Amino acid sequence: IFDKSKDGLGSSPSKFREACDWDRVWAYDWDIYAPLFRFCQLNLNRIIGLNLPLEAVLTVSRGGLDSAPEWLREQLPPLDLTKQKHRRRFEDMLQMPLQDAVRRMDLPVDEWSPKNKLNNMYQAQVLWDEFMANTALAYINDVGGRLVALAGANHVWRDAIPERFERQAAQGGTPRKAVTIVPWRGDRLPPPGVADFLLRMDGAGGGDEIAAVLQEQRQR
Image 1: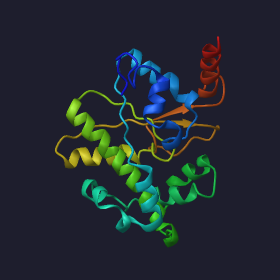
Image 2 (image 1 turned 120 degrees about the vertical axis):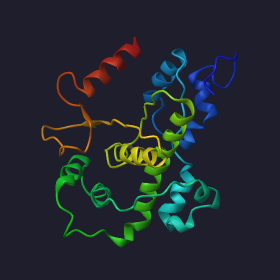
Image 3 (image 1 turned 135 degrees about the vertical axis):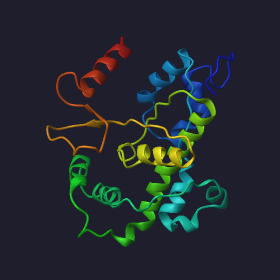
Image 4 (image 1 turned 30 degrees about the horizontal axis):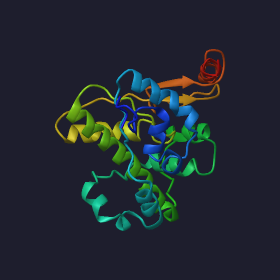
């Protein structure tokens, strides 16, 4: 969509916003993402959508994988629902701050058991991770090069999209590496191994300060 055609759908960020139905489908603050889209346009970087349709996620979250539409089931990669620490973090994030949920990831799960009433919601979460990993892998296998993925906080820990991407790549016979950078607040760091790099958001030189500088530049 993001092309240079005169008056085409990708000729400006505002027309791209309209063409992809941003306000209905994505519903995030457009002003946060518009500079990134403009950067990609000016530097001739491709933008691809990794996610599956929101309607499919909502359907699975209500009725489980058995309720997934036929077109989706035909495209699904194998879903790994066995990651107990991933499941626990998913449940923890429904009832506590992100930092608290992540810090619990190094605790043993021997005496922990998942809540069955959340099975459908968890299947939808894993579907999200696996589908985005699969889309990213398919793109890299087809086009080559590197891909920078922007995903939500619960998708970017190593046991979410990154490890699923690496597992799918290895199963396909072409091992690939995913590196994750996760925003973080507070002095207590998460357990080792849950992310490759952390971007400190608070404090001098942190993500909040960078965002403020960029916002000031945009307003000039």
